[in-house]
Length: 187
Image (cartoon, rainbow, N blue to C red):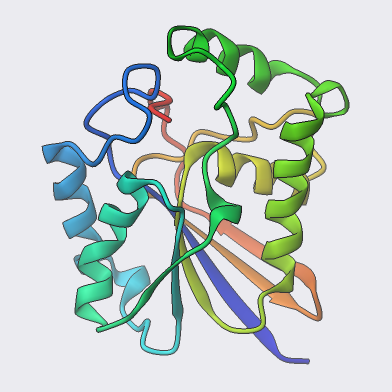
C-alpha cells in the first residue's frame, strides 16, 4: 500500500479583509510569515512534492518563497479556492461567514455543500505528495469532512499553519494539525 502525504498551508496575513477587497495580496506581516516557511523544519525536504495553490493572490504569494527555494512550478487549482461568496455583497460578507460557520452542514446552501464535497474528493484523489496553499475555510471544510463534524468550522488554523494528511488507496489514513490559533477570519 503506497501512502502519500499532502501538506495544506493556510495563506499568510492578507493586506485587507475579504469584506473590503475581493482578492487582497499579503500584508507586510504576511510576507514575513511566508518567508518564515523557509525555516520551518516540517518543510525541509519538498523536492518530490507538487506545488498547488488556490488562485487567490494571498495563497499564491504565500507559496512564492518555497516555490523559489525548491525551483518548482506552482499549479493553480480552483478546487482549493476560498468559500464561494461571489453573490454576497462585500458589506455583508463578515455576517454571512459568521452565520455559515455555525450552520449545520446539512442546512448549508447547495453551492457551499458542493464546494466542500469537491475539496474532499480532490484531496483523496491525489496520487503523489503535494503541498497546497489555501484558505481558512478550505482547511476547515476538509477537516470537518474528515472528522464528520456537524459544521464547517472545525478549528482556527493560524496564518501559514501546516496540516499534514496521509492518504492511501483514496482514504485518509491520518492527519496532523499544527497548533490551533484564534485568528481573525480575513478570508
